[in-house]
Amino acid sequence: MFRLTADEDDVLRSQIVILNSGRGKYGKYLPHAFTELGVAMLSSVLKSSRAVQMNIGIMRAFVRMREVVASNRAMVARIEELEYGRSRTTSAIEVILEELGHVASEMKALKDHPKKNRIGFRSNND
Image 1 (cartoon, rainbow, N blue to C red):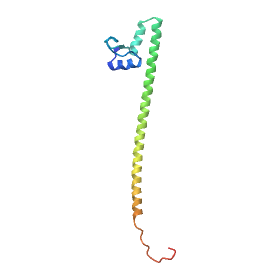
Image 2: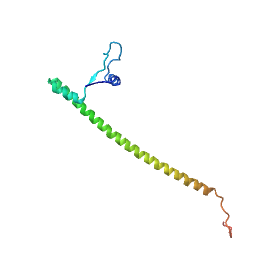
Image 3: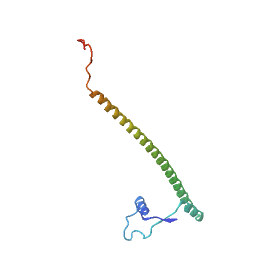
Image 4: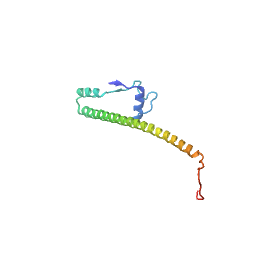
């Protein structure tokens, strides 16, 4: 069991729709919370059917929370992988665009050169 921080208390207060804080509305101490191990230990002490049902519900919530965290880790790893691939693709595109710029400037330079007069005999068809 541990005591929540003020920030955690504020987040929970907004999530579970508790009245706003103010004079006399709440106790002056921060609430306590159980860890998963604390809940398991508590279930060994409390033997009523209601306590057992609550313990099962809480343990299922912890299992679901672990699944969500694990899926988020997998999602973060996938996003990082996509970001790495995107940065490599961006680098390749930048190189290609730079090379295209060089080719375009060379083509313009060739196009801007005046045409040389041909030397030799010219027919009327030329």
